[in-house]
Length: 135
Image (tube, rainbow, N blue to C red):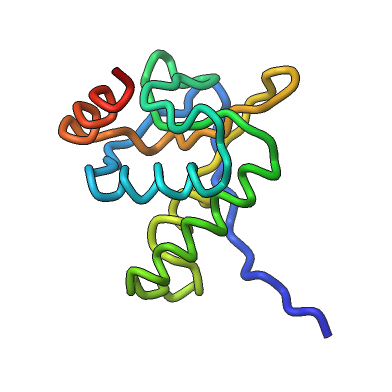
């Protein structure tokens, strides 16, 4: 018998009224996410300033890739959290990976897609670190 994944309730939002909350990615979480993106072969890494549809200029984190990259990113992030000894939450997911997966949005960009997380932005410290890496 095939095991079923736990059902995640969908949040009802109107596309043009979705707002970014104050969830911040700190410097350590940024390092974990960047490492998982690297291991998933995401070519351009994390965008710290993406503004998706209906976000009214607010910024969040995201990355450009294919569905394969998205799947590998979540596998790598979950495995990394397991290696680092970060315990599973009550739903069986790992803290950052599960939280990001629950907040995932996607826009088509022709040959690829951007996967973004509207409720997550970089903290000031993480943004400074991210911008220094880009230089």
